[in-house]
Length: 349
Image 1: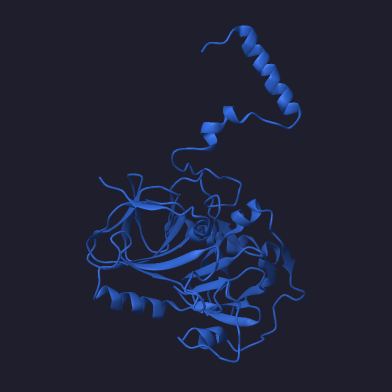
Image 2: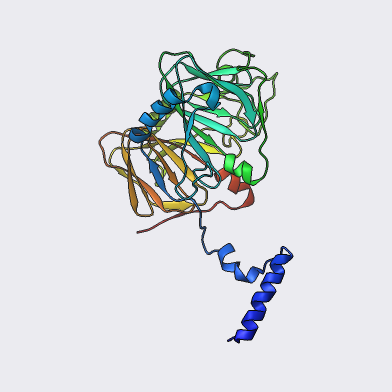
């Protein structure tokens, strides 16, 4: 069907009148809204530790912790510049705290996780409980909990932050409040929640919120030993190798309701099967070396490198070396599952 110049001009005038009433015609954007497959704004990317570690030292030298609140280098997706986001729903950053420093206490409605990359002697305090920070430890800061960081050691400590901040912003649900003091006073013994709730036992005289895990810290040494023992007896997933979830012991789900986190073991000489799924994933290398292939592009990673895989991007893991490799990851999949939006499939070829 063809349209005359007159009818085309009339239609454009009509569209302008619609806009003046804050109305828009769906038929002009229908195919952009309802695409055959997901079209994430984020793109795959690889941040190298060898490049970023010296930049963290510069930040430590140039920016006082009192001025920074949190001394963090935000890992910005190349397609999301200026948005402080690694994907449309997730935030990631590298945080450094110097010897003797304290990052003041505050709370916010974004859920946060910490994965320790370097150093020892630091702690994260959550609602009055200090969790010691050692390399590879996974620590959670659930929504609206008071938290501060301190370094009682003699050298800087660095960790990866992961938050659902962009998702909370999109829902217009961000709240923030500083604590009245720089640090919270201790309310319970150090690492108390792990001994209360993380031993496969439950205090009968206490209750804990079910939305997020009552455990603050998941030690790396325990998780790594579990991976190694499993690797001796099973091949695990054809897509992810031996993979363990940081679980909420109260309901068997993710440690936080909006972010799922994992530790995975890639056996020596492993070449796993490609797959894709809705939901974005941020990977951080822990041990060994390997290759993450995303949309046909190879990212050769080393310890402490960070990579991002956007929703529905085909990806697979390879470990061509003679030693096992270990990756930490976190994903926004829990945001999708309750609404039937999570989908996963194998990718052939």
